[in-house]
Length: 79
Image 1: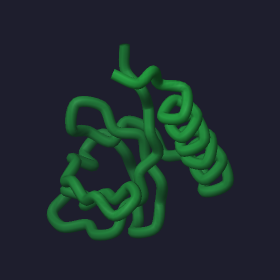
Image 2: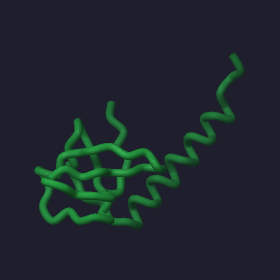
Image 3: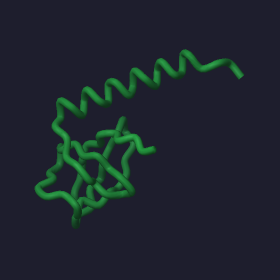
Image 4: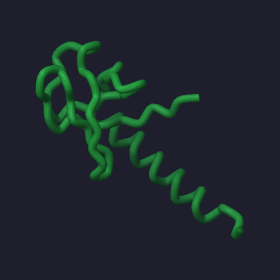
């Protein structure tokens, strides 16, 4: 199973985008998409950007994922 997390493109150089999520940066290939610019949100799979997503949807998804992570942390049994 794969979880698609929107990532913002913060730098582009030679069809490689530097993407960022909550301060964590990674590089991903942009070869599969057209017209990606700095500031766009993309979905990454296996090191490739495979889909552009609008900012509103990206921010809603990220907020939901943060909320779900917080809930999971509070509900986790003590070990």
